[in-house]
Image 1: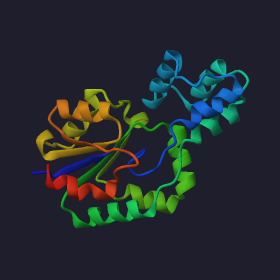
Image 2: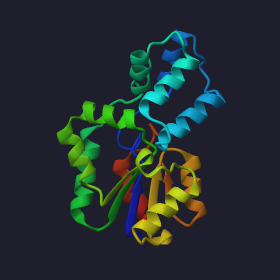
Image 3: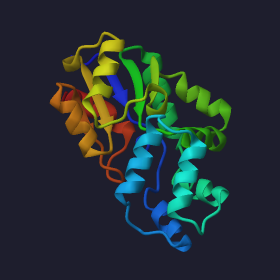
Image 4: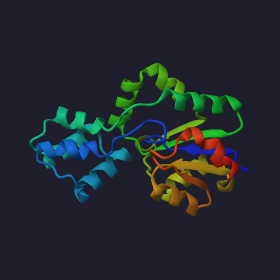
Length: 204
């Protein structure tokens, strides 16, 4: 029986355009592909191992034609809308008190600041208040798909894996959760929506 639900954030609640960063950075002499150097920089930033300034400075070395503000704007341009119907659904789910709700997101400092700006503090606060706990990778210094981030949430909240359901749009992340016994839904962006969650829980 499912008692706990862990949600990803990007492309689950807030829509993303993950390709726009690569499209835009090409204008500044960048590549449309992620280099190992940029991957490592991003991973370090997502777990809070480097500051926002260090992250932007690191990207500026890779894209010297781009100014720091241009890099920041391009980086944040992947964040799109947060449809109201998803927030309404989440608030209703929270009010039912049937499940413990958790957010677990690989979200960096620049992105969460931009999310708050785009959503507005009132709407963001409504969103955050739906959860029993709200975990962002840069604050807890762990990231998906590493197993330790799931073990952290389970241990911290005294949850049983088999009573826990996880939703993420990245298969690598849901596979990692499945490997430690957490039931998972790899949501297919564009074909499925988080508002269909209750149908998925019937099969869990």
